[in-house]
Length: 261
Image 1 (cartoon, rainbow, N blue to C red):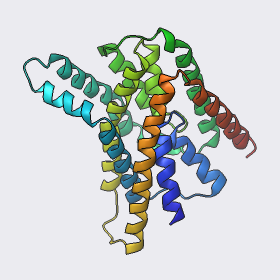
Image 2: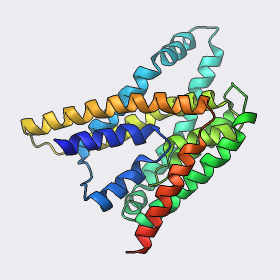
Image 3: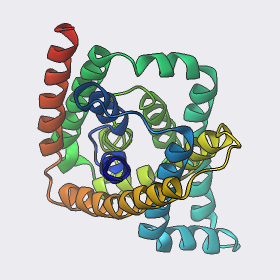
C-alpha cells in the first residue's frame, strides 16, 4: 500500500507546487523504479486533486456562477469566458499531440531541460512580482496563460509555475494570477481524469486495489490542499524564487542523469 500512498502524495504536492508533477514522475520511475500509475489510478488521482481545487476555491466558484447568472454579473461572465478561452490551447494540444507528449515522458534529458525552463520562468516572475499589480484578467492574459498551460503537457514544465509565472509577467498581481491559474486547472484536470478513466479496462478490481486507490486519493486530496495553501503563502511572501532554485537543482541533476545514460 505504500506505493499508493507515495503516488498520492507525489501527485498532490507536485500538481500544484511549481515543480512539475510529470517531471517528478519521470524521475521517480528512473531513480526509484516506481511504476507509473495505471489508467484507473491516474484518473482517481486527477479527480482527487480536482476535488482539492474545488474545495479550496469553493467560494470563488460559487460567486462566479451565482453572480454570472444575474444581469449585473457581466464581470463574472467575462471571467468565465476567459477561463473557457484559456482552456482551448490545452484541449487542442492534448488531442492533436498526444503521441508526441507520451514519447516525451521517456526522456530524462528532456525532462531536465524543461525543469530548467521552469526555473527560468519562475526567476523572471519572481523579479516581476513587485511590479505586477493588476487585479483584472484580460483577454490577452487568458490567451497567454492558456498557451503556457498547454506547454505544461511536456514533462518538466510545471503547469502551476508556467501559468502563474506567465500571469505575473503579463502584469497580473500574484494572488490574481494564482487564482486564475487554479480555476483554469479545473477543466484541464477534469479532462485528464475523464480521459484516463475512459481508457480503463472493464475488468473488475480486487478489494485491495480499491483500498489502495482510496488511500492514494486521500493522500492526493490532503497534500493537494496543503500545496495550494503553501504556494499562496509563498506568493504573498515574494518567495517564488525558492521553487526556481529547487527546479534548477533537480533539472541539473536530471540532465546529468540523462547524459550519463
